[in-house]
Picture 1 (cartoon, rainbow, N blue to C red):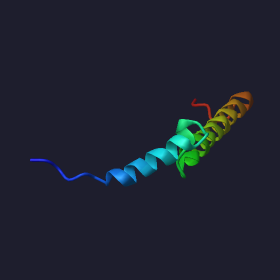
Picture 2 (cartoon, rainbow, N blue to C red):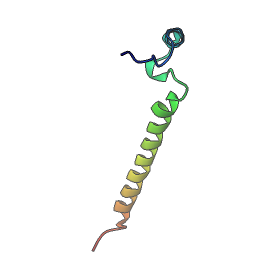
Picture 3 (cartoon, rainbow, N blue to C red):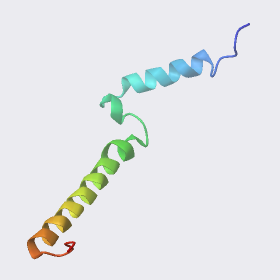
Picture 4 (cartoon, one colour):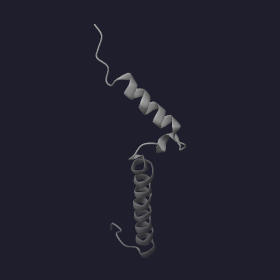
Length: 67
């Protein structure tokens, strides 16, 4: 018993030709790939730097110590 194909071969071939013809890196070929490969890591790095900066400030001024 065979399963029905997910999409037709012609449509799949059209998508393959489109994505293989783009002159960008493989991870930047989709529409929303810039969000996952650029925006999210930048937001993560910015929040980490803010938390580290806050910790350094607290240590420098002796704020938030448990007695």
